[in-house]
Amino acid sequence: MLRNILFLAVLSILVACSSTKWSAKDSDADQMVADVAYLASDKLEGRTFGSKGEMKAGDYIASRFKQSGLTPMGENGTWFQSFSVKAPDPHTMEFNPKGLEATSMGRNVIGYMDHGAPYTIVLGAHYDHLGYGSFGSLYVGTPAIHNGADDNASGVSMLLELAQRLQSEKQFNFQFIAFTGEENGLWGSNYYCDHPTYDLGKVTAMINFDMVGRLHENKLAVNGVGTSPVWPDLVKASNVHGFTITSEESGIGPSDYTSFYLEDLPAIHFFTGAHEDYHKPSDDVALINKEGMVQVADMVVSLIHQMDAKSKLVFTKTKDPDPSSTPSMEVTLGVLPDYLYDGVGMRLDGVRENKPASIAGMQKGDIIIKLGDKDIKDIYVYMSALSAFHKGDHTTVVALRDGKEMTFQIQF
Image (cartoon, rainbow, N blue to C red):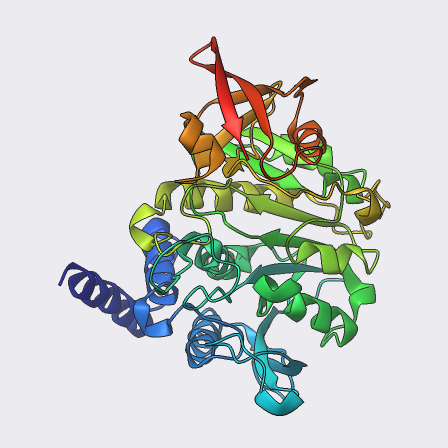
């Protein structure tokens, strides 16, 4: 009943917005949460690539792009760029029997804001998610809809908000892309970069949003800052709300900005952090920090306003992870790292039930400083240390809790 009441309330907001022209005086926060609520509703069944829910989500995004006055920039004058992949059935994640190759079709949604400027900024966010959790889920239990409110209805909501706010930033043109297939391996952004509907030579930068709906303790991650020498200063200057910002230089990461970096384009990525609801049915709209989303949007507008519109941003290659050097791990503690933590050690943002860490008594907020005989300085040292263990091994973890050292007995 509560979900039905919420949906009716959201629907009334959307109807009101469609009947009147949006203006800056309207509540940014309310409209953003309304967009998240629709995209993360049960009726879209988790927006798996190629599913009916993905189609409904794409249609909704296209209608909101149109409402914002954008021009379609998909295929053949439409909002959509369709592509097929050899993939399992989106509901069962099983391939066709008898060795037949199955195909699924998904759609990127693309709109354009033409200010007659010399250069264009691409703003992107993926809108697909995990459906009923038949792949990629961290949930243990009966199959359930994974609504993906933060991951990544929040990023799409950010796109829709910026489609309104950036109408006054006439020094750039803007291309807005809602990608599909990100959860499957950056399918949509890879396809777009191989088949761009706009001349990438005129693109000065790409800004990506993935999981920007759960701002906590005023902490924000901005990654890819090494892809242009101007990013660090721009990020610092545009931090209008005094976020505690962590960043990584690499243009390679687990979201769609990677595809643009590989096209030699400066690309950055906004992220408000992981949480215990990541890739679980509990990632729902009620947990969205709408005021935090507005603050992130404020920062993005400030950053764009300060960018040089007269020349393209200089691109720089970054020192990227070597996949061959990534540790292979046979075991897991069952913890979710706090990727926004910038102190010594690895802070836990979540602990999964019935896994070694939880069985040993570890809790969210603990800071691992030693695993076995290895001092843990950061997540990378942690991963390297963990790779040395095998199933059945015993070891100890030393962690800080409220500033006090605690020792936990671990069995993998």
